[in-house]
Length: 148
Image: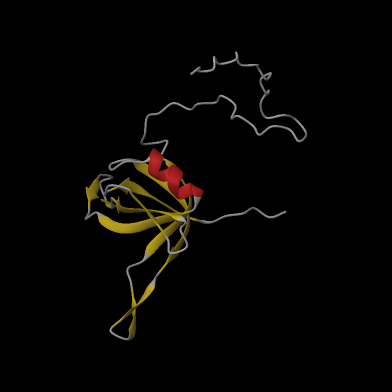
């Protein structure tokens, strides 16, 4: 079986992450991200060039998770693909700014300090098992009647 590969981007989150919904009601994560660029000089040193800024979006459950995990300034690596959206403006189709559609995203391990939680995730109950133990029905004490 062949190896599955996709395009990737890395950078830093330059805007506050936004969580919205698509017209179908699915979660949509959006950030503006920056990429620092450098040029290697003949003497082996590096010259910092202008930082470029781009759009990154993510959809579905992954969008909600990304919104919970990422903040402005975080360094990340994402897997997905680039697309150029088209919009209708004044009756004409106009190309928008390129955006990276992330399928997966994670903190950049080379540029981020963090700890990994390796505790097992809680799994769903097996088929045929009871999800909870019902309590035994109890008899309530009779309530006194009000007399006239």
